[in-house]
Length: 135
Image (cartoon, rainbow, N blue to C red; front, top):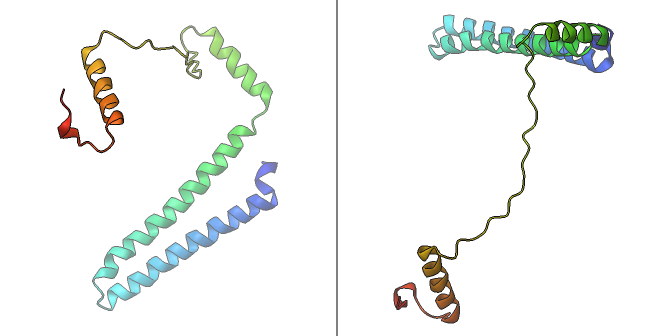
């Protein structure tokens, strides 16, 4: 919990409180405008509390991520040992290994040979149009 009271986290806590209060205040303002007859404000009245709930959700999620990272290594090791006792519960995901493979061009491919001949003809005749190709 000590990591959640650093100056950066205090600023985040204050920002979350200010944003939540601001969104709820704007929702209340839209409610008062809607009661005065502004029909569009009814939609905004429901939208601003959703924004406030989203801010609270993000703040809660970030706090949980920090608390999860701050768990002592002894607990993590004991959880790993418990997982190793149960067969089939450990899932490991590694980075995919990519092996470079040299591709050998197929010289027998007639389409490839015809296309290469067409490109060579275009290079030899820079002013020619593709419709002038005799092949």
